Length: 223
Image 1 (cartoon, rainbow, N blue to C red):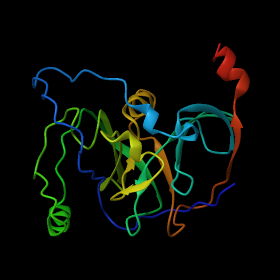
Image 2 (spheres, rainbow, N blue to C red):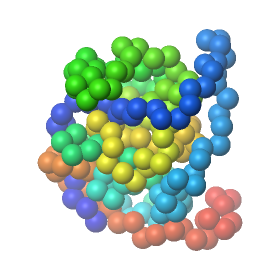
Image 3 (tube, one colour):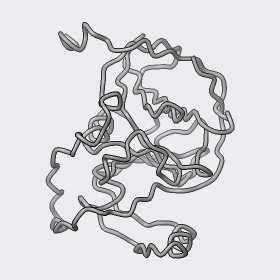
Image 4 (tube, rainbow, N blue to C red):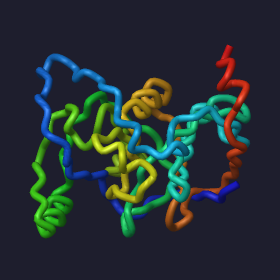
């Protein structure tokens, strides 16, 4: 049971310097092949699980618990899918109630000018634009978060650095393993409510309680 509230803090977008070898980009008329992510880098507690979640939020709502590094997709009463996430580092955390304004598969990346300046000062030269693909920091899917009809510049997206899941590494975006973001993308609708719990407690009042793994559903499925 965490208290949450509404509003945004700072603008930013998740950023990661790829340290894996570059891979060939797919043809523009073909989607990249989805490869199994290196989940061995991810702690067991951050792997996708079916859980019992007590909340009064409607099915289809997304609750992002940045403190504990979990994202919940509310499915039915007392049921949710829980994903491990990476969140904003110090100074880039935020809280608020937003919604999915649009979605994209293998999104392109246009980092904000201020990010390019900030990273250049650290000796990191990043491109002004990058095509979608396996080496793109936004990963396989992106869900763009809007408030009042305007893009907040925050996203829920994949990552080409799965070992950052469970850490405070981004510039404010919510990052997920690629197979997890593909799974969420197929369920979350444009217009879905997204509650982000984080610094500032500006999310409004809502309560939820994670009661752990939904064992029966995990064993026997949804049927």
